[in-house]
Length: 286
Image (tube, rainbow, N blue to C red):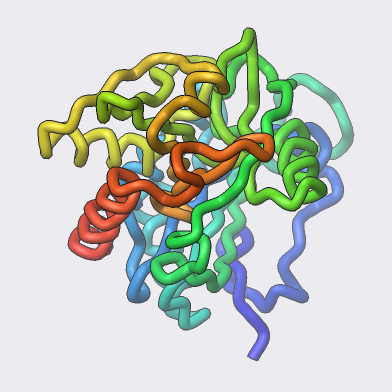
């Protein structure tokens, strides 16, 4: 049976999921997206994702075509129709389709475009969860409002392609000698003194939903957290390194640019934080 997508009020087969060639998301990347994980057929930490969606569209003066409550209803219905037990729900909202290609916002009453689709993915028992991943470093080429979850992802595409070409799973982006974030993840290290370090939220990085939850869960267990920038050299001298995202949860980084982090294996702090997050995800999914 062909997978089902949602496009502007209708559930349709993928082959019929279409938007106008004049859609501003297509022409200008004038849009916002979100990706939420699904476990046991339920949405993980979705309130955080919807809150970030609301903030992002507000930052670019884009009006949501549906309420957040209705958007969650659509997400759940899409998960149900596609029989997703473990995977992801992608949603994108754009400024809609005008009659031509003009940079300023449409003057007419153009309704925003809302599309969603799902994909199956093994998250809990993914092989990389135990083995860890290798990353490379690349220059951070992005604009200065990375806190907005924009669909303008060309810099991340190039970073992820460079990682794939090097046989790695992720790229860490570097600016002014410091790690900003991964191509699609937040970055962490664990120092020799067992301090968990991650960059402080700001315009330089996306405020990761999984990052936010992991930091809170760590603090609740009296683990030491420092929110600050760190260098690649500091990461290579650390005990452990890991990334977080909706698509991988918590995943150990075992090598950076071909050099081992720690003993080259997923460390105990990373493994424990993953266990804690999985417990949280299963307990709070809706």
